[in-house]
Length: 112
Length: 114
Picture 1: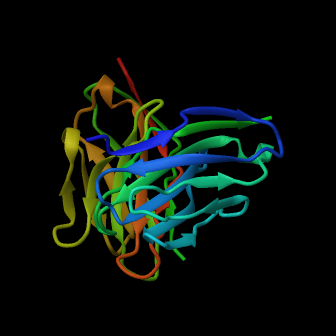
Picture 2: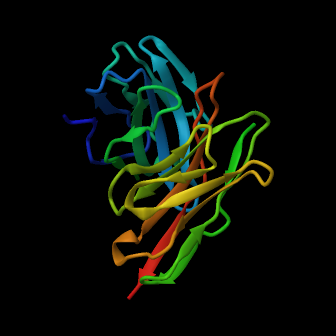
């Protein structure tokens, strides 16, 4: 049972490049979320989804896009990377809103 | 809007001493409350959760937390810490209905000293 799998683990981009952070879960969870973690700021919600085809914005959505075509996958897209998006990104999933979230190991992203 | 405050960014404590990590929240509606732990270079893992019922909640690794509605607090405690408890701890809230927006506190780094 893999749980929540994030790829890649590390990535370096140049300003203006685009990329997709992948997130997959094998627990049939309906709820999925993307967070970014920055020193002293905790985890901030970027986007979330409550099921296939349903997504919504979180606290810091600007510069990021998501889609949810299947229950398993929830990719996060950076269309034009900026240095301010240098961060550690976590994907999480949950069976229900009163159940804990299961986290991936994170993607460390640096934008030069 | 909901918010979570963890006033202590760092807490040093000697091994086998008790510890309390503080969490206060603000919400106009009832919420679910969670504590997570993050070890270096890993994702977050659940320590415990409060949904309803008994205000004293027991979690893994000997941790417990008490929900206090009047003070809107959910402090985390452990009577005797170990070196292996050194990690960052996050308090989080989630609304039981409406938008699914988990809000995390800024974290408390617990450092257990030998």
